[in-house]
Amino acid sequence: MAPCLVLLILLSACAQPTTDIPPGYRNIDLDKSGEAHLIGYWLSAYLDPPGDPFEAGVVFESDGSFFLAARDSMQYKAPDLMPLLEHETIDWAVFSAFITETWHDAVGHPRSIGEWVEIEGDWRDAEGWMRIPVKGTMSPHERVVHVRESSVRAAIAKRAQSGELIYPLGTLFVAEHVEGDVVMETTIMWKRQQDAWDYVSYDVDGQRTDRIFKEPEPLHSPIQCLGCHVGNRGFEPERSFPRQVAAGPNGERYIGVDEASRDPVVTSALNEHMRRSDTILGLYATVYLSRVRTRVLSGSGSSSDSLLLREQDIPVDSQAS
Ligand code: HEC
Image (cartoon, rainbow, N blue to C red):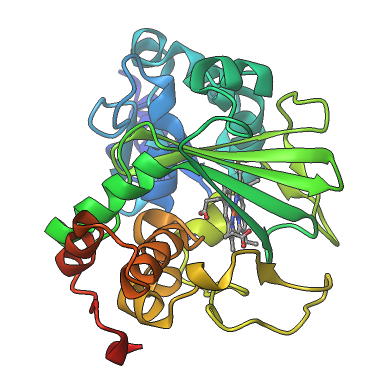
């Protein structure tokens, strides 16, 4: 080999950021905290079956940097990710545009609210759903959050074993943002995997959308949905519950439940808003168990109501309140 060619090869090897990055790999540089988690969370859906992209050899880490595998291994491991290889570096702008464009279809989320209703039943009318109106941080509209009572009961049962409210697989939260009788938009959290929720949003016509109304800037769905749910910020009106809270920048703030659903003993026992178990921010277990405790204290509770409270170490005598 000619000496200058050897020199050229040596020089080009030196120019690589790290020595063990094979050709064709692409640097993923999102410039965000928790980058490995974000990459794992968003890219798992593109594998068949869905799974950890690091374990599957689709993404790997070297010296704190992340890389997407080259075309030859990608085309059979995760072909739907191949458009990302067209970019020299996969930065946040490239990554978030790609996720917004393709992620819902990779997961298989319904394109319309009508399809959800076919699968799950009509949460507005069906028996067995909790419906909690709230006006708070996420939207200037009033939201009505719907969740099956059986899902909340299952999370409460989990707390008796593990100390954490963990919702079962398949749990669906539907938050309808309402003005009068009109559902302006709908946001959904759906527990598809054991330790992660999917986020999906729908517009006034019930069609999937990538924008949710918020001022001064809209929320970008689903890419900005994780922020508040996985962080550790406290939010009103949840933080002040069971007390009412003063109006905020978008007018009044409230959780629209009656006195029977606002028990201070239950609220502080669960401390649901600050623990934000399972990344859920509303006070569903608190409201459910408050209702149970109100029944027990008023003498109309069943023996299983009392048992449920005892299992949670929540006092059943009125002296505690
Ligand atoms: C600004 C912070 C913030 C962002 C960003 C955010 N949420 Fe929320 N979300 C909340 C808070 C706070 C609650 C508790 C109920 C309330 O106050 O509306 C909540 C509740 C929910 C609920 C009901 C279940 C629960 O955790 O109580 C759903 C469903 C939901 N959000 C979906 C979404 C979707 C979809 C997106 C992205 C479009 C999103 N959220 C982005 C703050 C946020």
